Length: 221
Image (cartoon, rainbow, N blue to C red; front, side, top):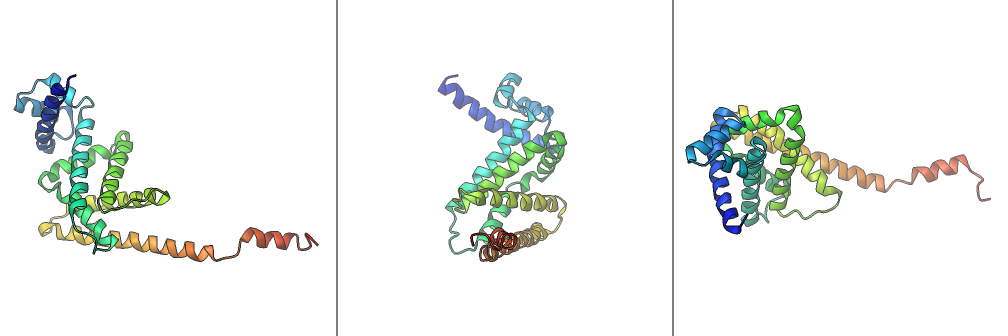
């Protein structure tokens, strides 16, 4: 495929994505959502299949990654240096959810699709990428074990907050943002406690040396 063909397909993919997300509110993430999108845009079915060879799964991946990238770019451009980490995380998580507001029913359909046992690993992959986009957006550069723990913890926060948001009928989703703040506060408290425990444990004598000395009191004499 030439560069010109790639560019044309990219444009078709973007149009199909927008139209299919609108249809997903009615048809869910099914082949029909993509078929109807192609029909409305007068794009041949074989072109739609070329744009999203994996069908609904590729469609959902494209939507999720599009939102992730938008959030990361906006966070990187924002002035967050005076905010604490928890406030930055809350900003990112809220922004990611707000980007789905216009397509809340489609987002609920997406969650139902990902809740199917067969799709659970795929859902985990997408949610990890979302958490990574938020952490990167606020300037996290960790590459050690903390890289994974930060993102896994945020995955849990995002999942529970999304479920709350789906049922939230408060004005401007105010209850959801209160719930989100509480969840982040809880997670940060746990991490702080873990850090304190690790510091405390590091100052304790080595238990193996103590037990060894008790077992062999005369060793070396």
